[in-house]
Length: 278
Length: 255
Image (cartoon, rainbow over all chains, first blue to last red; front, side):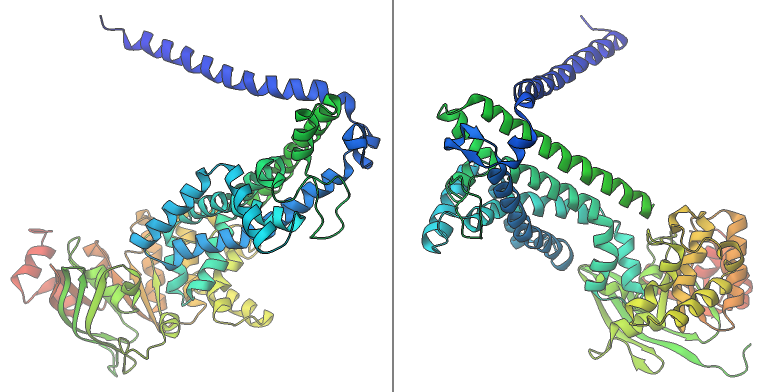
């Protein structure tokens, strides 16, 4: 029996709507649980005091600071490396076997579980290079973890810049570098920023790669070589070892809100940037 | 038609290949200074390839290979010592579709100057004024210089692209079907502009539109399958072509 196209279309629309509803429902449920349990824990004291008694008492200030340091180091390292690689692959090479291998490698890297990056960071930075459990080891490990994302999104953004811009730029006697910096990158910035935001989110929320490399000390980090505990690791330890579920939820709420704020601010800035240019 | 004949470009035995495909088969042609030379011919005949060979834009196409010589101002631009950046400043190009950068009107015009290291404020302002004046955009746009160029109409954009080129004060302006994205009224006005510009510039234009070639050019060349079939004064090409193939094309029996 054939279903009439009109009816078929109605069914498809309903089913797709249902799928969307489920997807959104899951998201709302997660947010609701975390915020319901976490928001009551939040207070100025929770944000402005260091953890005490293994995290049973006090706040989470040192873990917030550690998370910020780790993320900043990760991005300071990964952004130039990633964007630079993307520029080189798209603007300075022609598509051939070697660029395809590099791209394939970057994609494989993106699929590797973060705990493997943790192990790699532990072996290379903590042991081999003797950085110990530290902000530096953790930040560098995170940098390599988010590198494929930044390469990939930057590459897509750069490829999306119309070829005519480059052609005109060359026809006016610009060098390739001038073309990249004055024409290609300004047009690709929104896409590149998207990759960086994704990376900030992943760095803030990462546990496995950091626990092996930055350690889990509760002290306020004072230098690049301080061992320290990020918010996500703090949450994991509080919950895993049953130290304090309420503090764990409070930490989770701060994590979620932090990621939300980062996204909102960046999208706002990007909106303004795009408006300014078109 | 012009008192002192000066060949600003002399092309000798020019061959261009795209991988194995032979796009130009030994072209010999002289371009006279301060004239408009039109290149006509069916699609794929090599006229755009020829145009791009004159400022080495074919270099940017993967797999393109050029043989032969193109003398510009007495020097072979295919000599290894050629400075491409200077060459392209002196021999500029206007493209088929208006393609301003997504920058302000002012930044579009001054782009070329800045990449060539010319950044003095007064100098940029003066060139901005002169270039926009030359393409008859100054009066329209003088109060909107910081607006994004993408907001302009198609015709204004194409004029702006010409102004962006003129800011560099090139000697030769290569135009690759510059009116194909414009309506007939706008096309007419751009043609008037070309006519004004030839006082100061040498123009080579590729066009699909034979009436356009007949209207604006002093010389016309007919390309077919990578060969230059005939090149001569426009009047002569359109009234008494020497080659049967040219005659067939311009009378509409072919093409």
